Image 1 (cartoon, rainbow, N blue to C red):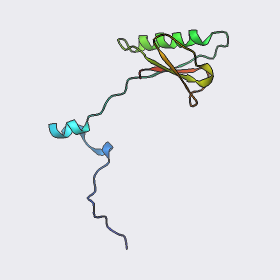
Image 2: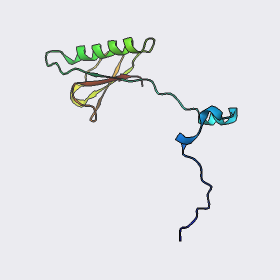
Image 3: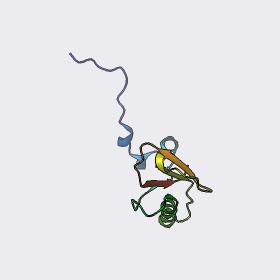
Image 4: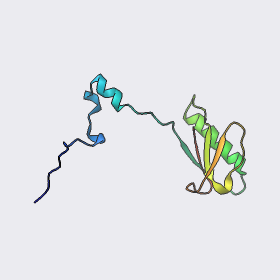
Length: 103
């Protein structure tokens, strides 16, 4: 025989209808929007990494006007210092791939 739970069933968060939420409920349902990231891929062996990252940053600025990037995620083998931008090496980022966004 199946055992009944003593806790009431609640719908998963995705099943909550946000359009019918009351003001008290809507403050509980708000979340912080993450800044956008842009993935840039350039495997040209003749282009230095600094130019690839600069091109990725320019593409980010063109795609998201008014948003300044502060972070670039790169492969650990491609970490270089860039003034005004945090360049962070990540094992999970493939070579020649650059994720531009904000901290």
